[in-house]
Amino acid sequence: MLYKKTYLALLACSLVACSKSKVNTTKDDDPASLNTLSVNIEGDINKQIHLTGTDVGVGLLGFTKTNLKGFTLVANVIVNGKSVLTANSGLATIPFTTGVEQKAAPGGVSQSTGSGTKDYSGMDYFLFYDTDPNQKNSMTYITLRQVQDTANLLKISGEFHFNAASSSSNLSDACTMEAIAHSGRIPMYNPDVCGATKLRVTGTFTVYLDKKAQQQ
Image (cartoon, helix red, strand yellow):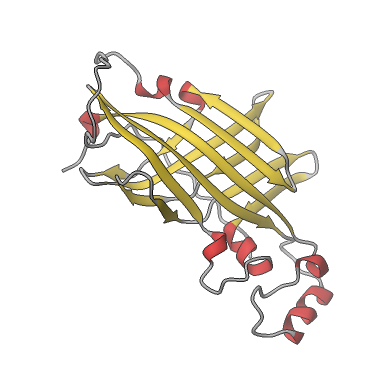
């Protein structure tokens, strides 16, 4: 049940115009300098993160005229040059449809402290808290609110939310035996017996992508 964190290279990408704007940019503008990301974490961790410009992590494997491929947002809190808290929205391949909540891969949170690193994942949420056998409550959900052509760039605004949980990589005998005694139960494990913890993450974002990188 160890959560594997996936790190994506940040790529400058763009999308097709869905509406027109009079905003003009030049070829020397850095699209990333316009980005904003706000993340609210509640539960086992309570933290608000507000990032702007190049501090906003945007992962994108590619895009066409109709959708985003491998899109993810990353909020990284740096203290004294070290990452102490990271939240990622999970990979999403989504069409340019606004106002519709769309399902993505599970998101995650990682917190570093003096005693080590604690990871929270959608998979652990499914194992310890989700009562839906199809993992409905363990996935990330993204809603695009605006996809707007701004001359050389594409402006994308939206919101996302997900649940995540953390547990020990070595479950106790009591935890395992309790799960065996309730074989077939959803969720599989009792979080109180196993010492699991959970959190909920919500976020809003606006990112600008260079349209010259658009795929056919």
